[in-house]
Length: 266
Image (cartoon, rainbow, N blue to C red; front, side):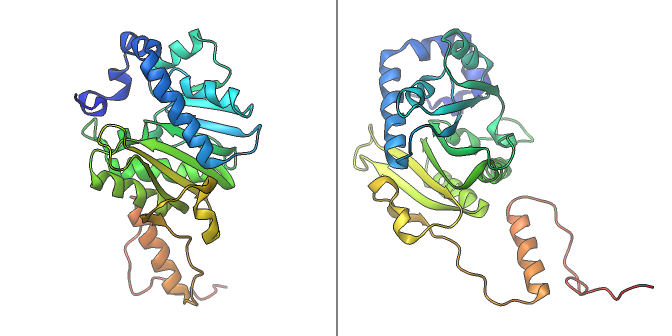
């Protein structure tokens, strides 16, 4: 069966008909519920947290958030048809129409945690001539990091097409400042294999990598950043400029004057 993200952009693929069919499927409901419960189990959140559901669709995951722990949630999705179904179902969360590839449009420190079920793999596709997956991933994770309280947790279940997509997602999350790694359930099963990206906003102790008592794939662990060594003003500026370039941002060219202090003018 063809992967949905290859067939069409999400706002096109999830039409009125497809959205209703997706939501009414008992099989989909069961799968969505089990993956959301798994994400919550890994995060081990206290009750009554403020959670962002990215790619919330028709609110199937949001219902679990309301039932399990009494969490207050906001759902964000790019498909108007999916959100219309969520409104018809009278879900408890607030709903927001937005493209996650353009960034998470909430002020800094808004959320305690974030979940996303079967969504972030769409960021790896170029659905138009001006869509750059690398830049979309960078915008997403940079803004996601900002929208979380420090120490906030993230669980993103996703379906990578290949190892390069997994690597791109992990690198973008690490560049944004997240710690964490990849949890893989049923690794030997082609049909039931599930990927969960488990992140924490900010540095964590090494013991905190196993969030919720779950062992993370050691080959995909993003370690906390080490303390910066003593560096000169120029080294600091060059390092920051290199980081901005990796995030796809425009940066002034380096020169012999980079990092040089200007003399005071009278």
